[in-house]
Amino acid sequence: MVWYACYGSNLLKSRFLCYIGGGTPVGSERTYLGCTDTTLPKADKKITINRELYFAKKSKTWSGGGVGFIKPEFDESINTLGRMYLITRDQFIELVKQEIRLVGDLMIDFENIVKAGSLVIRDKVWYGRLISLGSEDGYPIFTFTNEIFLGNDINPPNDYYLKIMVEGLKESYGMSQMEIEEYLKTKIGIRNTPNEKAPIRNKLI
Image 1 (spheres, one colour):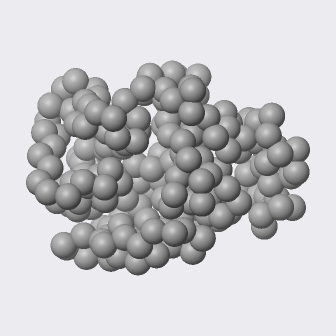
Image 2 (cartoon, one colour; image 1 turned 90 degrees about the vertical axis):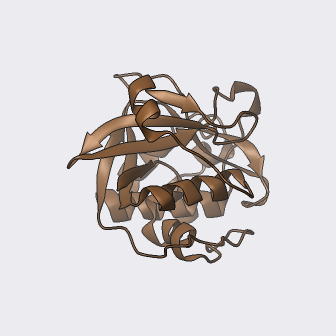
């Protein structure tokens, strides 16, 4: 078993479970095949990730809006709110394959990622860098992001993506609407955009 740690739309459990059981998330234009093993996560927990959250790229899945990434570099001053799910290694591999749209076999050396701290398993894909975030309850924690900081591709998320994040933060952390707005409006890709100027709590909730 391993923990998969997320920080974007997968904060909402029903959205994440589309990767496990298959399906089309509300507001998304993509249908996920799911995993061979559709067993639900054994547990899920909150996690604070010491890497900066930002929004970038133009996702066809989300009608051209940006999606969440974290900077690869550790920064103890940064507290990105995450959620982690306890799944099998095979489910994690299939999750990564779905995220990077890979058809065919994928080998992940989990032990090497733990030793190195992070490892690029595929270059020139959106989520090709796997990062070790320590362990919890005896199981290693992994997340993924781009191999570099996509500073030239910053793009605000669309309303559906933001709404799912808002719902995920409420579900995972019990945050108030005001707390969620304060958390999100400072992120790269939202600050200095219409999403910051129009209060998130009024626009999306």
